[in-house]
Image 1: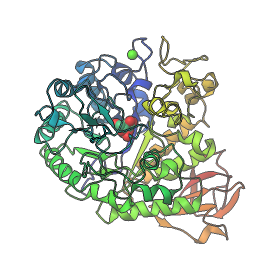
Image 2: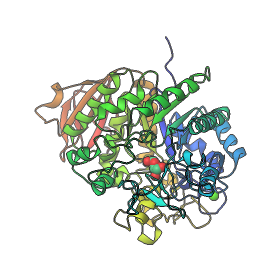
Image 3: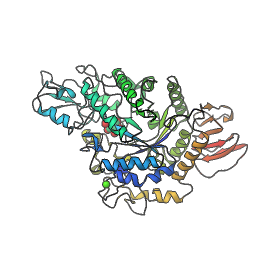
Length: 535
Ligand code: GLC
Ligand code: CA
């Protein structure tokens, strides 16, 4: 049997380095801290880690403002630490995915510093989007930054530069071959160091068209682009259709080139996953055509309500759309940009959904802390550091809640994360949720994840399509009960407030809530929980 590439149905554990584990007491997580905890990660049963950026950065946007993409920021360690991390991960048979941020650099990058010093029209400025303003002194267009405020900032000689994010994150000009060459150098740099793949930040944003065209509703647009702003889906989609800076055809040419580069590393199975917020969903599949990238994030579940109808639709759609280009879907319930799933839909619901998702075809992404059932940290406004909080003048609370460091052990905050003062405070109410406590508790979320991932590897990975079952529903509505079969496992999720009895064959091997009950014939699924039954 031909063996499948490692990434195909991998479980990928996302580590936000600053929040994982602090090895030197300065209050911020670092690379040595990650290396120290890789045994823990391995024991979860995941296949790979994805590291959010740890590159040289003034850290105005949590490291997504990169000042030197081929070096490690001193707050995280140095290149030797990165090598040690990769080596230890590989020893443990964990793959390592690095974040690459091609839409923009930090304003501290040497290119941008040189662009500021060189005048309008210079080759240095042509690596970014520098334009003159309008005759009335306004910026070249009315686009709004995704973090709030205008997407243009003026420099002393009068020109403006474009930044879709913070003013400290100037967008790169991908019409310039120098930009392509520099990123290929960065990809090779990390591949040569042993990295196994990349998560491509804002993968849909690199190519800009019609810089001189105003958007009809810039304020609405900036809201539509933010996950944490609630908006009716139709309204959001209407605002997002054909924005001149996202999902342009030109981006695909870039990924075709990158794919060639990846494939030139023979025998390595290098992969990349695109962060592409695109509409309509069909467009996402273009990123995973056979000569482009291997995966594209599906963000539907980051905002999905705990509703069977809704989940059935988005899950089916994602499976079908991906299969139309021969790809498998990806699933993520949490990440560093959105509220944690336990906070968003509730504790039992988040466990049930995790179990459900782990049984689906494709790759599952787990955001560090999700395995503990961690909620968002409760923060004071004075603690917040997210540029979206700052630039929106507090209108948007921002993403810090999901970025509060992990609780490891002990009874008092900061629960072993650091011996110093954590960069964001950990809530005392997390005492029960430490790794130490959850390891010891057979009913904990941590143990649920471990058992589920072990059983997933054994019974579900590479077991083909899902087959939705109608028969055992006993009249229950799809809204309240979802059942599918994959391989020898039947998965049933009860989304209602009441326990439901279903007749499913086999023996229950996983249950997201309470303890396993009947093992033959009719099975009682507690409210808002999920079971796996093995035939
Ligand atoms: C991506 C990252 C996010 C960052 C933004 C700008 O969406 O996930 O954290 O702020 O890109 O780089
Ligand atoms: Ca540190």
